[in-house]
Amino acid sequence: MVKLHLYYLSFLFFFIGCDEEIEIIEAQQEQIILCPPCEIDASKDQINSVTTPWPDFKAGDLIKINSLTQLKYEQPMGAYPNSHWNINPWWKNRGTDPWSEYPYWGDNYVQPKHNFESCVNDNLRWMCGYSYSLQVPKNYDENKSYPLIVFLHGGIYFDANSFNYYDHLKDVFYNPEDDPYIYAAPIKLEIDWDPNKIRDLIQNIKKNLNVDFQRIYLTGLSMGGRGTFIVASKLSETFAAIMPLSPHHQPYSYLSLAESVKDIPIWMSHSDVDLISSYDMAKQMEKRLIDLDANILFRTEIGVGHSGWERIYSDSYVIKWLLSWKKEIR
Image 1 (spheres, rainbow, N blue to C red):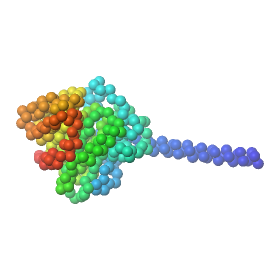
Image 2 (tube, one colour):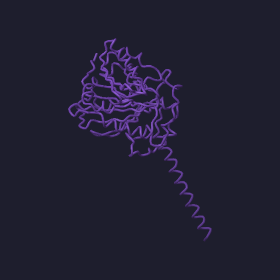
Image 3 (cartoon, helix red, strand yellow):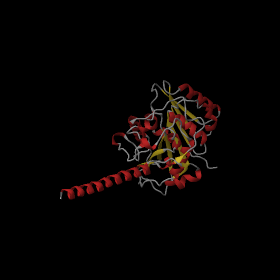
Image 4 (tube, rainbow, N blue to C red):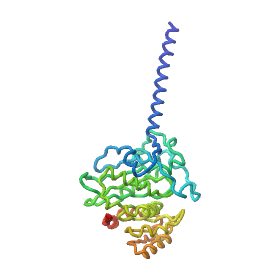
C-alpha cells in the first residue's frame, strides 16, 4: 500500500511538473511574441502592409503604438556609434521601457509582460522604428480631417522622472476646441532624430486616422529642437510649419540646415542664459534664415535657462500661429 501511494504521488508530481514546464514554455513563447523583432526591412512600400494593426480606440483616447518597432532601418551615416556621448542603457531600467504597451508611465507604470532587457541590445536601439504615444481628439469624427502635431522630446538619457515630465508636457499643450489636432510623441533611443522613422510614423498615422495632409507640424525641445531642424531638412515637403525650441548644438552644428528649411515657416525660441544649448548658435541660425528670406519668428526667453517650454506650448497665440499655416499641394 505504501509503495502504491508513493507511486501515485510521484505520478502526480510528474504531471504537476509537466504543467509547470508547459506554463514556462508558453510564457517564453508569449514573451517572444510581445518582444518587437525589428527584423523587417523598412521601405515606403512595406510600411502599410507589414505593421500590426492599431489597438482599438475611441475619440479622446491616449494610445500607445508599437507597430513601427517591427521595422529595421539602415544606420544613418555617422550617427552611431558616436564618440561624443557614451549612452548608458537607460532603456533597460525598470519603469523606462520605451516599448511598453502603456502610453505614459508616471505613478501608474505597469511592468510589461515581456522582458525588455532581453528584447533589445545596443544595436537594435537605433535600428528599430519609433514607438509613440498618440492623443486622439476628444470629438474625433472620421468624416473630418485633423491637423497633426508631432512632438520630439529632448535628451538622450531617461528615467521615470523624464517620462513623468513628458506626460506633464503633453497636458500643457494648448489645443483649441474649435480646431483640435492629433498629437503624436515618438520615443527615440539613439542620439539624433531620424527623418525616415518620422516619415513612416506620419504614414502610419495617416493610415489609421483622417489627417489633413496640408496641416502637419513639427516641434521639439533641446535635442528635439535640433531634431526638428534635422527632420524638417529632409522632409521639407511634409510640414506646413515647424517650431524648434532651445535646439541643442552638439554633437555637430545645425547651421548648415538653414538652406533646407528656409521655405518652411519657423517659430524659434531660446533662453539668453541657457547653459545647456547654445543661444549664440540659435541667433546665428536666425540670421542665416533671415538672409535667406525665410519666414522666421525668433523669441528670446529672458532668464529662464534651459527651460520655459511649458509657457510656450500652453500659449494659445503660439499654437494658433502654428496651426494657421497650410502646406501648398504641388
